[in-house]
Length: 351
Image 1 (spheres, rainbow, N blue to C red):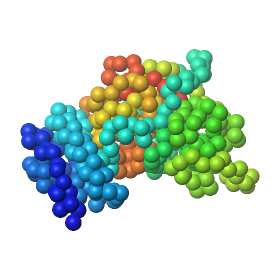
Image 2 (cartoon, helix red, strand yellow):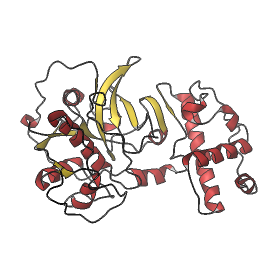
Image 3 (tube, rainbow, N blue to C red):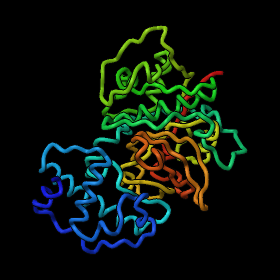
């Protein structure tokens, strides 16, 4: 039924010149499409319908569905073109494939980089004198990282970045991995941060210190929208931190020193189109340094002579490598790929 309705409308002939050459793109399981899908409009419609079913999408009208098909088609063109050009990572048809890039940026980014963090004195960086760094670190394997979460269409990445770092240091110091509440930050941390309209991790750390801690996620669950700040009962468990420190700006070695000891909150520019459809590999794609997204770094390593930082995102486990992205390090640029070295910070917790 849906196929006949779609094919009954005027659909632009797809780009006839698209033929697959990348070995990565030939693997349907990795990128979500095959060369056969690019040979005709009918095959594209079949692919779109299959994608709709897999993602559980529901459209309000045939007109909306046709609009989404055109967006899907344009995104597939970009994915296919880039998969022919790149080698260390690949793009795929994920759940964002029916969103234009502008729609995606408006929904899923939310760092208020224009709200500058406070400058701290050089002596505040507690890992300055660290000398021996391990070749690789993965805090997931050390049990200091909760499962990947999903911010949804609320621009609350700053809260997820903050919480991931606090969850990590709490596990390291106290031995307990406790999933904490992003919603509490969204609802209650309103002095400088702005809920689903963006915020900054340093101010969220300050709020947690001033507020006496952060409640567990199960006691203050995520709504994917702004709610009313709730006063929780005194007997409910909270996780506290002592304070926070900034990593020296544009200093990758300092970032690695800190990351070797705990997960960090970092900011990146995630508005590049490749970021939307990243599906795996060591990302070294085009991006600037205008910070617009808060994430957490949870380790670093090397693969096939490519050094990378492991980044935990908050777009759910279907995006990227089960919710993570490996971003190239040692780029030769002080600010790092996508500005990852520009604004890193971490919470502190007394034993």
